[in-house]
Image 1 (cartoon, one colour):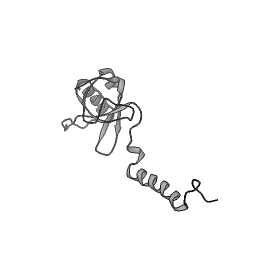
Image 2: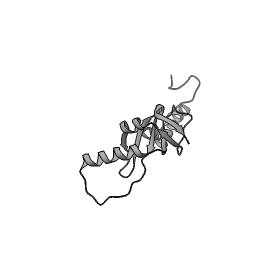
Image 3: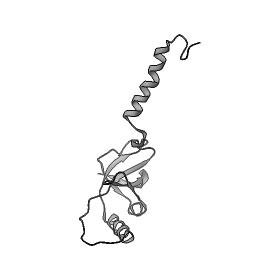
Image 4: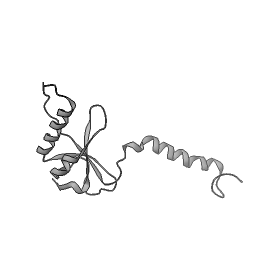
Length: 122
């Protein structure tokens, strides 16, 4: 008995796995946002000439987060249907204080918040 479905030629059984491998290669799984989480872009701030340690730097970033009112959506999870990339949103201030800062690359950081922390979409 040959592998594959009954009545299917052996060559056709090989095309299906190759097709999925091509799709997975084109769209790596690490770029798919899962669940009901939202990545928000962190606004650029003016470079300071002062040199501070990491604890002070984190405290200054947390202070800046309190002042932010409109944030741009970087990407959303696959369960979110009403918010899309590029939308401007208002996030609960308390949620911004608890938000994780995720480094996506050497030059790009994003904020991770839950969809229920978003109050309004502009």
